[in-house]
Figure 1 (cartoon, rainbow, N blue to C red):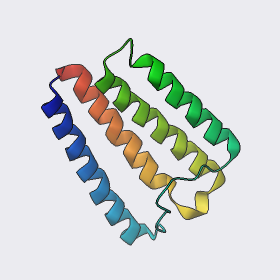
Figure 2: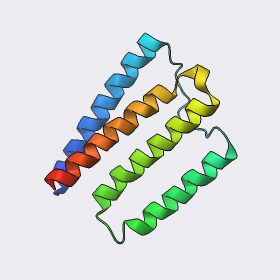
Figure 3: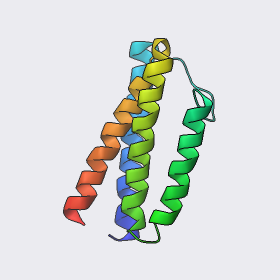
Figure 4: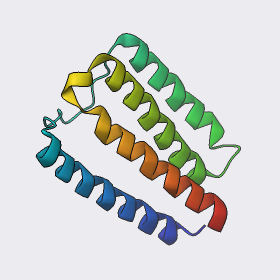
Length: 114
């Protein structure tokens, strides 16, 4: 996969994600989150750090583009579960669920066509 094509795929995914987030905030009344994500509890923070360390090791063995998208998918799934389990009333998990589905679609697209 060329760098330009990967960048275009990421920009399109970011545009779709941002558009959905703006729509979901207006329709579902999701509050605006702080600029930097704060984990729900210390377990979530620790597991996300472990996943980031594993990403660092895995890019040495596997294609970095695919590992980045896979990492973003796993992080979105994990955040969706934690937000749904502990902060369900804020409805922030809907945004992370959409992000997880979007990254899964991008991951499948990259695996099939590249």
